[in-house]
Amino acid sequence: MRPVLFMTTALLVAACQPATPDEIERKDIKTLSVTGVGEVEVMPDQFVISGAVIKQADTSKASMNALADIVNAVQASAKDEAKLISREFSFASVNTTGVKAPECLLFNQEADRTNATLRTGEKRITKRVCKDISQQASISFTFTAGPPDLAGALLSDFSENGAIRLTLDGYKIKDIDEIELKAGERAISNAREKADRLAAAGGAKIIGVVDLNSYQATYNQRRASPPRINTSGAGESSQLVEGGDPVAVTDMNLEAGMQIVSAGVQLEFIYE
Image (cartoon, rainbow, N blue to C red; front, side, top):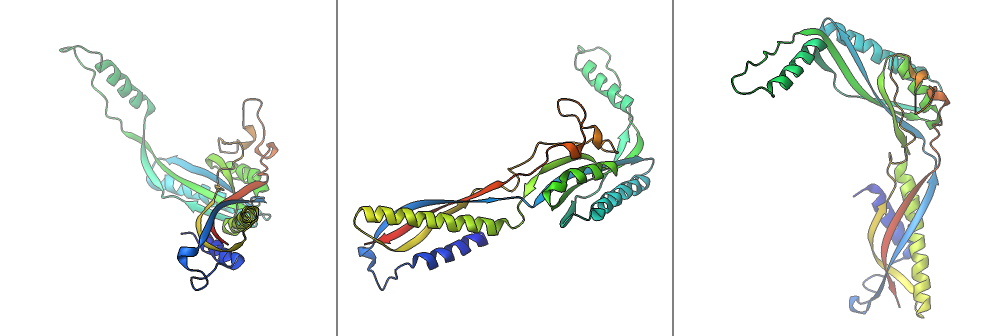
């Protein structure tokens, strides 16, 4: 169970003052099940960018060195952005593969296609052995930082330093547990208000709570995403096209906008 659920339960006990078994016999307890909802409007404070670095060279060592140069440049560009209040890179493992000649690969594909149409006894085309013409090193990464209004600037910086397949994945709320707790508090308050009104309508009153039957926060950290943006890398970030004329990353509307964090609870109240 998440820590926020324990905190919400503690608040519930403190706020509703549940009756103890010594005060009421279990067989005499009358209960009322009520659902409450709560919402908190909050501005995301982080953005998430994913991307990759791919380099080819004659040898694996040379491609790895070229890859390292770009990775270092990308990290340096983030470090040099003085307005960032948080920054965190997450890198995957480096992959190295041999690169075959495109002409050889194409010939083998055509050979497979032709051989599949031949009748029994017809001479089949012999496929070629494609040798490596170079070595490729690649790595993917995720960058999480804030504030969110710098997402466009970092997309541009990373692209200009050689990163490719850059995507603005979305926005995050750093202290999401605290925000969900606030939403949970409001949901509990909403449930108590409903219970009080229902009990009063029947000439009764709420005297405590049996249990917090369920709690569910509904915000997804990456669900509220901006328009998906991909760059071509190598300094071409100013030539993005989204169904029209080329436009610079930093000129696009990348504002995160206010997000809603909501919570729902189901409480079983005691009344008399």
